[in-house]
Length: 207
Image (cartoon, rainbow, N blue to C red; front, top):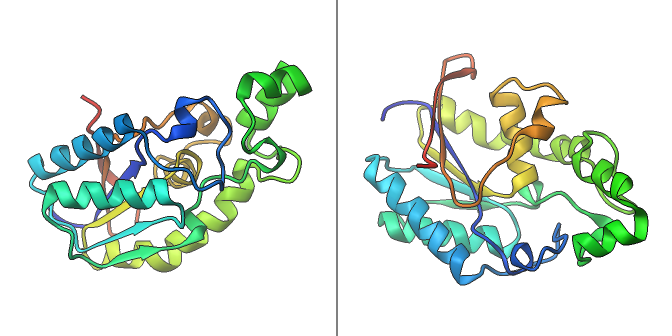
């Protein structure tokens, strides 16, 4: 694969994903299944013949460890890696650390679903998807996109909601459509960009 390549990978399953807890900015490690998901992502990317020039990740260990594993599988441990909390998961505020079923019992199914799946309604003390996009997108435009436009191959390993903010722009999704867009853990999304930063082609390596 050739020029202006941007690859997005959601981190492997974390210990709190497995326990059905709201994680957000809590710094939780991967499960063994999550480690294997990251390994599989690296193998899939290696099979595509992709070589990366640089990688970006969040300030949270589950994303950083996933990135390390992907690069190890690809034999690319020595490329530059940039870590920034701008790419952190959405902050779930008062929901962080709570079991999702317990949260539904406390606040009600409808309210919790509104916090989880609305674009601009934040949980108490936390962020909405709009808030998350407000920090992710400037970082993308200032730090990541210029490298892609210079024909560097760039890998971003981050989180469901921080990557959803990027996918919203790349796939030109509405604020309603993005709420239905699921990103599986450990599945690479490969975007080739045009000279105007729009998407020329996309490949989902879910299979």
